[in-house]
Image 1: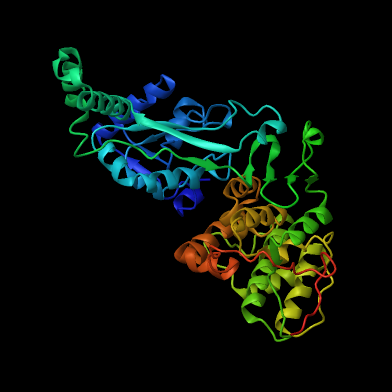
Image 2 (image 1 turned 30 degrees about the horizontal axis):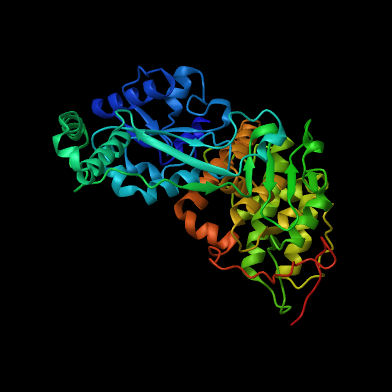
Length: 454
């Protein structure tokens, strides 16, 4: 994994904590939350305040996320809003925490100038012990305060002020006045500088969770659906109409089509070649070639320390032409159709290349669907890295050295230099705020490419 660290492909954009003051604040917050302190004098934190160095020190990567549920957080600076969320057990956690920081940025900036803000992302369960618990998580509420309870004390002080201003006898209440003065010493002038965080609940609608081997939960759709990577005990008891596993490829394709959630990358509605879509498919073919050759023991032309040209990749493909998997042959059909006006591919959902040729449609759950498609097309290491980093890191650990080196350099040189541009090319522009509820899925019949005309 050191190669990924070298190229900035792992633990990137973390916030460095090196000053004694910030380390001290972090330790006070850590003691407040979990009763521990770190002995490290320098470390890095993600958006939630989790540090991989401290996780290694404690031997616990979930030290701020016990049971993988109700994640706790430590905010030392509002700059954390741009950091990733590591070891995320729920796909919605980072966006919820980032929204919270954005909505309270001024208040948090003022609070973190003097002390850390510690809190918890609370839902309606304390632990996820069975798949049924996942359906009990409907809202996530954020509770936060400094470890010296500045927010709680400011709220109490405001109550005293209201009483002082409205009760006729309050002017003679020496105890009340003394309490107000004492609290004001710690909170400051809350009339001029209010200390209050916007309390808000965040909906937990459609999401992915790492629990039970990985489960995609789609509740905010016409036909609520659970899609699990693999079967686990308790799935069959869920009060959900549609329960699928990754083995139910036709069922997944049907679900995506029925709800207008995915579309073919190549969509030749005017029967003209689509060079951009063809280029995307061609790169996916290259990734399949690299993966296949590496798995067969090829050194990828001594790729370590050098680059593979497109010509060299073609040579590798010819070398292992007889061993190429169905994903290669299916994607070649799609590429010929997109680039060379070949025959329309006839890929049904059972074909291994089917999900490689799709991307999410433009809707609110676009990122979640692209994550699902990446999970279903693991030989496309670029999409896996972009959309599902946990799955990418798990896969990377099991690759042979030549593939690790090629993939790391490709991502560093071809993707990382223009992440936004690459994402727009691969997945389209960001979805509009308003969605068209009359969208019609691209398959007719389900799971089959067909020529269309205007």
